[in-house]
Length: 150
Image 1 (cartoon, rainbow, N blue to C red):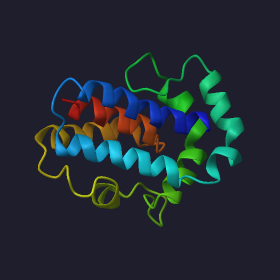
Image 2: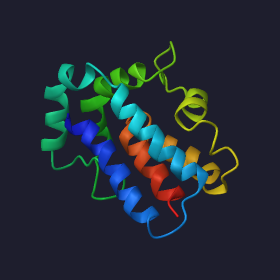
Image 3: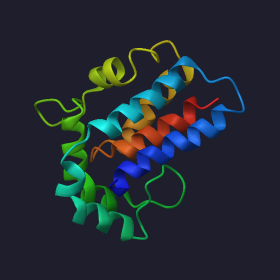
Image 4: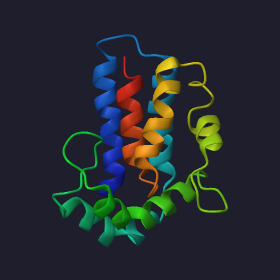
């Protein structure tokens, strides 16, 4: 499994260990399910963009997790922009104009299970604004997961 996909898988594992300690929200469970489904849906991107993702992970200024260590957005995110664009297209979250499809993410990935979650509603726009300029979806998910985790 490609490193970028492993990053998403690690989010699920970390989230699962936290959720074992408390009762997870419906939104939190939707995240877990959505991330698993997305990992399975991404097809040719890991192979096609292996050099870029390897470069990203080898760079000490780049981190796969949101907030785990310093992350230079302007240096790191462009490295994996094309990979992220490919992956989002594969899972139906890229609009025709090349931008992230928020409505599709909320409807298909999260199955509308986060629309009434206050933590999610509060975190969504700040997480999106800080991560999606270069479509860094893994960091976007990590940011949101930290906010909706019980």
